[in-house]
Structure formats: C-alpha cells, structure tokens
Length: 401
Image 1: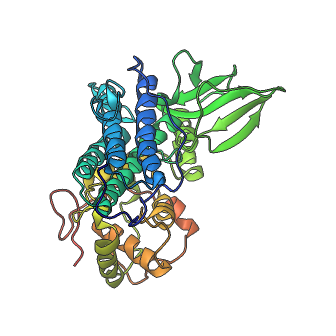
Image 2: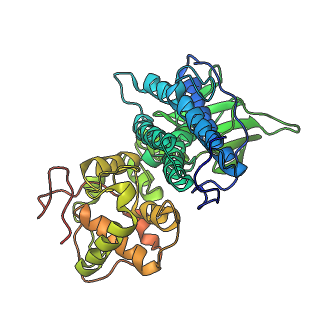
Image 3: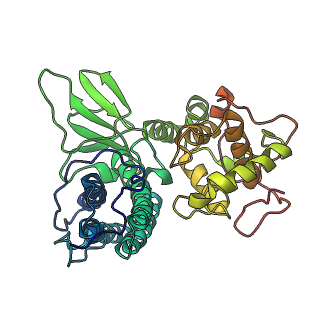
C-alpha cells in the first residue's frame, strides 16, 4: 500500500476544523438561482472531501489524492480518478452565470469567487504531486483557504460576499417560481421575496402559528414583525431602503439616516476628505501589511487570493455599494488577517487602516487613526478622492513612502 514517507501528522489543514455534512452532487440546472445554488453546493462538497480525508489520519497517500481529485472534479467538472462529479462543476456554473452582456450587482462577487476557485484547483493539482504529507497539507490548506473565500459570507453585500453573499443579498437568492415583489413597498402577500435594483432586501413569511418553511435558506440579518407578517431582512436591506428613498425624492434624508446608501457618490462625499491618520502611522502600516496581508491582497493591493483593497476598482466598488469607513474598519478588525482574524494589536490594526487610506489617496494629518471604532466613521463614505495625487499610479493607488 503506497504511503507518505512520514506517517506522523504534520500540522492540520487550515481554516476548517469540523467536517461539513455531505452535499449531493446535482446535474446542471437551467435558472440563474439554480446555477448559483449548484456552484455553492459543489464548493461545499469540495471542502467536505478535503476535510474528511484530513480527519481520517490515514497514511495512505491514495486517500488524500482521491480527496483532492474529487474536489477538482467538483470544481471543474472533470471525471476520472475520484469518482463522478457534477458534469459542469462549480466553475462551469459560474461561467454560465457570468456569460451575459449586462453587469448585474452580483457579477463582481462571482468573478472574485471564480478566480478563487481557479486558484484552489491549482493548489489541489499541486497536492496530487506531493510526496510528503507535509507538502500535501500545505497545498490542501491553501486550496481550502481559496475555497472559503469563494464561498464567502451572507453578511457581505459586495465583492467579499462570494457565493453565500449573492445568494443571501441579491436576486440570485430568489428561487424559480417564488413570489417576487418591490421591496420599496410593504409586502402585500406572504411568502414573498422583496427585491429592488438587483438586491434582495427581505423575505416575508406569514406570521400565523405553525411552521412556514422557505424554499431555500436565507442569510437573514434581522427579523421584523409588520402587519401580521414576519420579514427576514438581509444585509442588503439598508442599501435598498436608501435606494427606495432616493426614488421618492428623499435622497438627502436617506443619506443622513443610512450612511450605507449606494446612491451617495463617494467622490462627492470626499470633495474635502478628512485627514484621519498620520504619515508615520501609514508607514508603519505598510510594513504590517507586507508581513500579514500581502499574501492575499498582493503587493500592489490589487488582490491575489482576495479582492483589491486600493485603487480605482476598489474605490468605485465601494462607492457603488455605499461602503462607509465604519464598515471597512469593522471588516479589518474582525475578519483580518483571514487565517488569523483579530490577531493583531489595536495599534497594528490602526496602522494598517492608515496605510489603506493613504494607498487610496486620502490625505494625512496630525491626528493618528484611532485604535477603536469611531461612530463618526458611519458618516464617512468611501469613494474616489478627486484631484491629482502625488505618487498615484495608473491603477489609482498612491505610494506610501
């Protein structure tokens, strides 16, 4: 029986500590919702295959190679060693969703998710060549990291949301045949899915006694009882509320009440952007970014395993999705670095955020970026800073020297 040269376990696979339940593999479905659900199911099944092999503690290399091959099959639709897979694979489902002329609100998160799937496949193929268990662990852990990014989070409405984000917060989350209504109006029927501008704001379910199963699970962020119905609000609800207000001539009021409004132009909000950090603090942040963040976000901040965090594309996405500085600060403090969230000191996080602001051409000042969340940051919308900037490159990233 072929074995790895080292029979001892050298490190555990990163990111996933508990095996997920097995997910059935489905044939290619026709609708957009079904395509997205099938892609997510394939990604989860690929993760499950790797985790189950890791949990076996086997020394037989064929156990691990078989798991890697099954994961590859699930992602690219290949057949062969490791058993049958979805004939299309997760990447095929993504291609089907993105092959269109228009650019829906869920396109950017899915493009990022697909790029991470391709990266995972590359590392899985490396794991097939491993001669030592340590080498397999390293390659498979990298693949798992990319798959987790592709999977995403239902609490994210933008590019960081991945597959779970778009299914929880956009029209991709509406099952075929489900009742869909304008989210700007109170629900007149239940169950129903409230959508507006491509986003899914809420799911209405009857408020009467008894179970009321949904066609698909949602990524609800809040429960609201209204007129006898229960609204399961998504993370995109505030974006939709602001957009609805702007359509009724109340854009100014909505911007003040909801800083996450996608109708507020980041550039306009940043005509005289505040100086929120010091030059010295940003320089320290550059060193921390280089040691803790560059592996995923790239030396040029344009992203490799994770999205870009500076430059024109990042700022335009932030502006379009209504991101505030409070949202960015929360994400950095609680979710980064991806392989060790909340592992830096408050001073280090503040320096990294100062570096990100400087890289996005926000001006430096005499007051350092705070080490704890500031309520005023909810009113500061992220977007392109108008004007010319020293050290700005062709991608809109300003050098931090």
